[in-house]
Picture 1 (cartoon, one colour):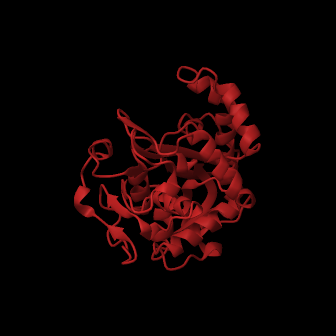
Picture 2 (tube, rainbow, N blue to C red):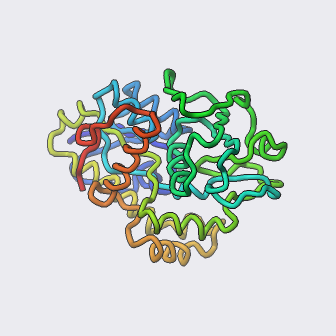
Picture 3 (cartoon, rainbow, N blue to C red):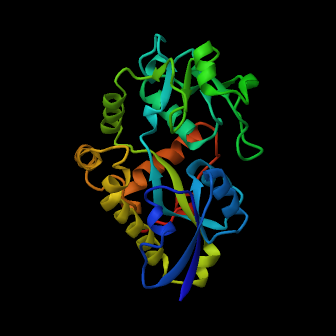
Length: 307
């Protein structure tokens, strides 16, 4: 029987794998939990895992020079546009009010930053109409920084909440909120309504992480690609069923909220598979090229169109 070494970060949709609560008849597996997506990505590149979780942006960049992996349609998704923050008294309303402003970002080329620059475009603001203030160097050396963008690297190492409060940055963007929101607020005045309106208007639910599998493993285990997808889909389905139970300590109405989200975004909005998700992947590849992150993407080579 084939054995699969998996690297992943810990989320509700990966806990069933971490706890060995799901399985498929065709293969056995073990899971290594990494502390961060950076660690998981770099360890997968180093060869520690047969299948590992990658930042989507990093995966595309790696594929420019490394043909060892193919991405399965197993994703982490987030409505990224909600995670934009400013001072509570800032005269800002949404991404459309950021022209000419200073935007702090954890790293310039994190996946969330590419999606936020796409969001700016949806509001009529060009990505070169703002000043980008990275708070750390990018996780991979040799990243491109096109001359068309405006950068201020003087804030590297600083904390986003501090920069917003003292006015050194007008907005902070990421895929989660800062630890300290004192004196700050979400950029959008009505973040829930604004986020859902953008999703309805574009049909895009941003993908942030992707599962990369070694081509060598797939070649050695011919015909098991469906089993790999089935294993991860079983973990996702387990999480769907248990989400209300797992988060009830913090979100006591989670089951009903989960039903509301499925009603709003469509049943199975977070499910895996190529057909369901290819429009979002193609959109991300296009914006990655447009922003100058990669020169081109051979989608048929770097993504496995299964499911």
